[in-house]
Image (tube, rainbow, N blue to C red; front, side):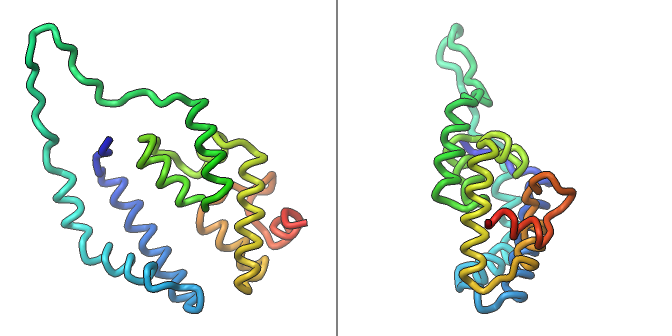
Length: 171
């Protein structure tokens, strides 16, 4: 399945590249060659990406009169997708999980949809793991709270992530 690139999707990619660039600059000791090169490559090729994906899809030719038209969007089995989301969140980060679900299951989800689909326990476990990874890289709970706000991580009960909320989650 090859999702079509919409202007909204390109805007989201641009926003993601901008955020990654800010993080690379704000935390240069955590920036990798891959993250730096990803920003450079995206900024060099957004027009090429847009042009490539705006080409019409292959033309479908019916071979018989009674052959049904292929379905454009096959509905995704929600239970199977929820299981996949929980399994992926147990070993991958949030963004990587969203990417894998989109690529392998054709499910374009928001962060809120992912957390609803995976369930509260899986979400909390993934947040804890991410918080411990950040802390192992000398990122303070204040910085983690700000990163989670920037990344769009839905807060647990509070209006927004705070250092106190991150600390309580890590207890």
